[in-house]
Image (cartoon, rainbow, N blue to C red; front, side, top):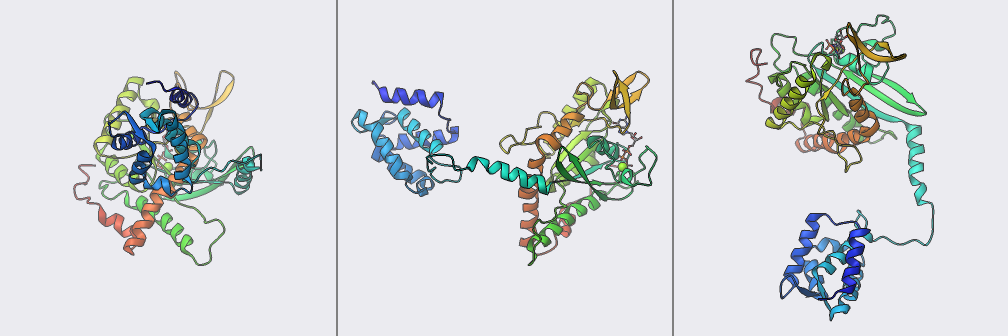
Length: 419
Ligand SMILES: Nc1nc2c(ncn2[C@@H]2O[C@H](COP(=O)(O)OP(=O)(O)OP(=O)(O)O)[C@@H](O)[C@H]2O)c(=O)[nH]1
Ligand SMILES: [Mg+2]
């Protein structure tokens, strides 16, 4: 059957109009089938409006949407004695749903000229630049895996707990013995970041490692609790102080085997309360093949144990890191001359392992994720997912959530022989 208008609309749809998600298209196809007496072929616009209203009542809650849609469908239908084919229907719906409505559900009102809306992002940027950004990082993992070293390398500053102490002259980092948060203000080209590094003592040193994650979980919950108290205060500060942990960098020992029971138990708990990015520590000790196999085994273990580490999200404005975790990292606070340049790296007798060289390790990708691409997403996920869960449980139960974390986990099978 000749459909000149339909052909034109279809061309528009496939060339410039955005596509509707498949799930919505399928729904619309079902609506068409329902309203078409001869199934799949032709259908009157009145029937279509009636079925749409039945199936998708929410879209008709938008003011005037029904009138606009009826006029459009009718206009296309007049070319064929008041009937529409499926293609025309989908085209009109695509135009109407993607063009005239916003993701807030409201109709877009055309404006005759510029009124300055496009400057809004500049206003926000100026405000944010004045206020600065907050990033709270926590380091967790067995003792001696290079946690304090890596965080100093990441931010090219002495940000780990002990190295920030002025009396500390020596380059070597002492063992971290207690959970301690240090805040630094880092500035690069007028952009300020209030970075809080929470270094934790390496666990797994003791003969009995049972419950070694408890102080860490407790610290995370305490920060949520603090925020909740501030949020619910009668007199609130203009900007609520945010000490909630936005990201945990979890260090895995470079054994080349699989995740240890202790890692599984820790990761299982930590991923429920915060964004966790696992890294393979001291990757310079593994060959290229060992790294690939170890990564593969770790991903399998995470999947088998249903542990969901932070994966990034393109739709949320970040980048996805699902294909790269766990990051193979190398940390060093000392610089060495390579090709006339001073670079962070670890000097060996056979050469320098460069931290920031993508051919040597994935340190740069980790730093880009944390700072360049996903800092906003990490902060937002902490607020909208992890803190929201905490808040919900806390307000629902009325009892301190700290208690719930401890009681909720059965640790009976974890003793010194299994961990
Ligand atoms: N080979 C290698 N050694 C590293 C790396 N990062 C750190 N080290 C060394 O590992 C040792 C321990 O480093 P730290 O940063 O103190 O380790 P930590 O995890 O903070 O240790 P605790 O505070 O005891 O939990 C130091 O001698 C570092 O020089 C790395 O990427 N590769
Ligand atoms: Mg340390």
